[in-house]
Image (cartoon, rainbow, N blue to C red; front, side):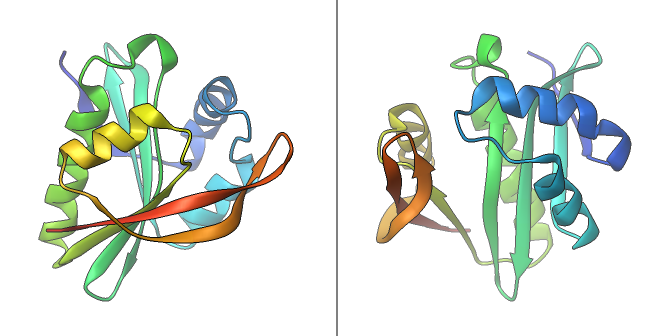
Length: 147
């Protein structure tokens, strides 16, 4: 696995949105990505052989960074790419002087929970009714990791 990580730009959005739709039952919209880019959030692509393998969006805040979205192409999941991209995000956050990374995750996203726990995240709270779900709303587990 040889991933090249680079900043996401508006020209990447067609491919990113297409991948987002393949990966999530309730995907981010093109507007969500456009707004994140316009707000100056860190948006990163991981490419293998020129193709998007994964991407992530983080929102910087004083002393911390909030991981808003991290996604790996379905056919490439469970191959270490999410972990590799997460490690890059830790390094970028430390370089930006962040002391902590926060995120929300669906309780039913067992693979993501395992990834985050393996990389030092701990549950610090819950957001009730945070995510849209097939039968209404779903809670979010809030996790944090010191950097």
